[in-house]
Image 1 (cartoon, rainbow, N blue to C red):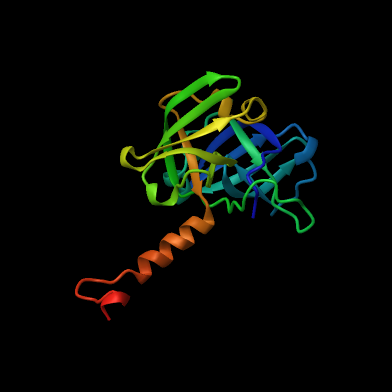
Image 2: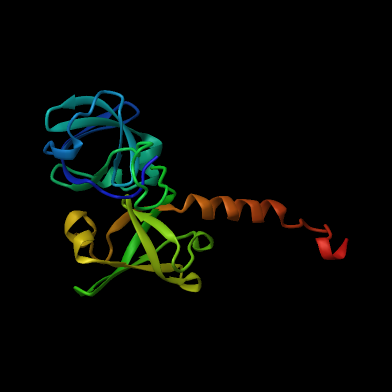
Length: 209
């Protein structure tokens, strides 16, 4: 479990194809990400991965073919920058929101820009039912508040403060870039419950019973 508060921006050092996926080696420069052990979990641009090899300033992760197909990790090349976060500890403060590292799908940046005080991203996506204004969403692993929701257009918007733009990869996003999206787990459970409780064809609603 994560909170969407990125602690470092890493750089992809190497990408190697495997029989059933890909091996990513990511440099993290030590610092807050140091002390990793083989088997530890790390959120890499919002995707929970397991470290299979650890060096003093880098770590390697095996990425399954399924993960490559539903996230942006398949787009990564040497030199690509990624957001890094370590799992939440029981003693930590919950500064963002509960993020599982299980990406729901990819979104596309349709607008990016503005002033320092009003810098916004507008994202096109497919699951409008899981987005509400002032709700939470994780974009490339970064916990953000939804500033605007346009279900009819299949888009939502977020605002980035200067710190977020410089401390994560989001400040470098441009129109046409793809991003990993993880919707708020509470929204997904509520949507699932509503869908399961909806009457099927020919079934009476509670008021009709």
